[in-house]
Image (cartoon, rainbow, N blue to C red; front, side, top):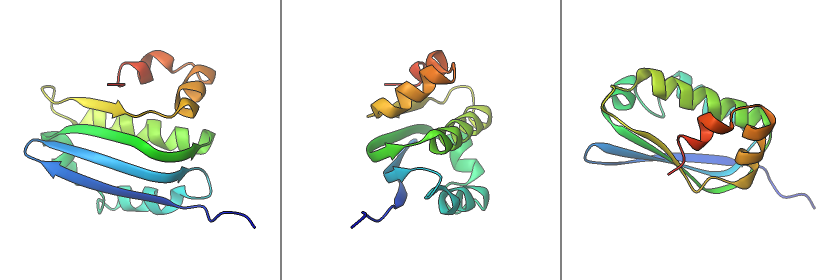
Length: 116
């Protein structure tokens, strides 16, 4: 029996910081709902992204494929471009699959600059 694939996300705000928590599988089979929530601003508003320090916590991510990595990079880049200059963007508890994919796609420096 194959395990069910899922991706869950939440945002926990504390003063001027928001922790974005992902859990499950960040893969082509699970991305569409997250992408839709992001695009429709039901996950985070543009104002929240601009005004807050953002921490992406990937501790509960069990698997990442190249499609999941591409979406993560896209979302991180959007945050970087949208945030005010005095706000920080960080990754925490980064799975080894993200580091490996960053190496494969020549994005090691970019990802490492975000790792806390």
